[in-house]
Image 1 (cartoon, protein in one colour):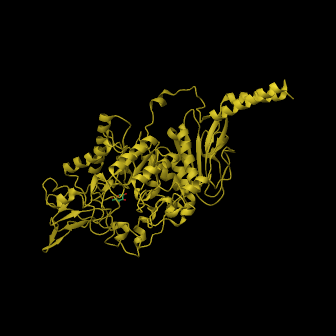
Image 2 (cartoon, rainbow, N blue to C red):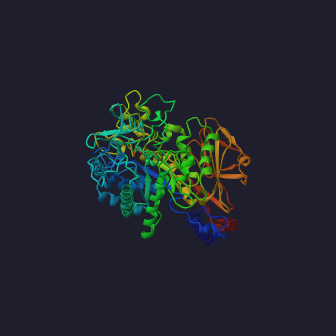
Image 3 (tube, rainbow, N blue to C red):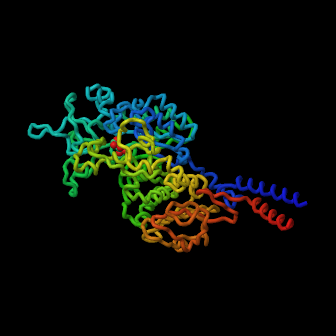
Length: 631
Ligand code: GLC
């Protein structure tokens, strides 16, 4: 009898284990309730996308020349899968003399040999498809390289290409020729370059090896539309559009003259871009319509070929009212995701919770109804997030962008906590810095955020086996690298992975409403809620004191207790702990993600909550009953 009882008990325990394993992640607590309205509005793949920027020169070098390449990316794409990435945008991979490291394109439809071949690209597309990671390419419309065939033919006066670029004979003052206007290049000095062959100046808003294309010429528009079509046909899921605000400059007046731009009093360096107010060379109204016309090219491709939506992400640091126009208007669609750079441009190392809250709300409040937000923490042009806002705030910022609504963009290495690497003048290669001098170059150099990705503590941080990499490796690579961080449960990398796991499971994170508040000078709170579903609250302690906040006071409809779903290494509480929502204590620079608990029996593993089905509870009860009867 005893034995029989025991075997029944064992069978029940086994069954129960099975129930645990089968536990449903994040069930809808009102599973029978089907909201038809919600069902109808299916989210598109990019609307909650985790985007990841790869800077190909620095991601993975497969052939030992010290520069990353396409085969390196294909080899390591599974790493992005493990992170939970939806899509990756690659900085330019096209044929280029590399005067601006690929942003000076000599052939828009050819792969640069330093990165590989078209076959390597096709292989990358294949690998990406298998992993279900979408590939976004960099579309650089403002300029080509001066080594582009189009420019050479334009300079030679070939009638087909004569007006492909912005040419001008210059201003004659007392019989001396001067540039057509006082315009300054983003990378210093006059934006006009005299061309001996053509005996005219050409405009270059960036380095002189990047002549500006002339978008007042319909042939240029068509040529660039064809570039989009070419890559769409190769299967890419969209484009990041480079330097959007610069694409148009004012048209010359009836006397074929350009106007000078007025000065900025705060800048006394006549070579510096900040010396002038760029009222004639950036954000010209035609640019918005041009972006809409590129969207039309994508939509036309969609209509003809079907498949999932292809997207545009637009790079613009313009004033917010202009940025919002890139989304589209009542009659035309624009970029699905005009980059939100506010976390880069408005926050500093000393910003308080109120400033964080208003920066986040600024985007949400300006965004036209029905559009999708996005959050960019870093890119290859800006100091890394840890160097900008504090290396002890890296987890906090990753948690912030992953728990805000919409898409987010991570720059490679920022999931590991890579920070800027100091580069000597001798090793400096960025044209933006090389055009200056040894005493000021550090203010302009983008090399510090472009150093090779840190895979391991092996030679060259596992990036390459070359004796010299194109930029030096960060000195901290033995502590900050993928291999090591994979073994540390609360490394930046693991916190990052847990975030995307959580986000994928939680419907509220994907489509819930958002309430952002400064809970004190130091603590930022983000509440995400969705009717009939779990509520989440993210709390971030920006400063160095221990803080206690009352969430009930700031947010409505919160239960008395919340469960911890995600912590960082600074936290004292653990995943699964229940805490009172009237008194949430945070350690210095601590961040927590909390959720409302359910009536179900829930258990937590590394940021992932699983729920024991009701059956599990009956099994427990049956087991207790059996135990009692066999005593
Ligand atoms: C964009 C790119 C930058 C490049 C510039 C010119 O801002 O992000 O890297 O130098 O455009 O193409």
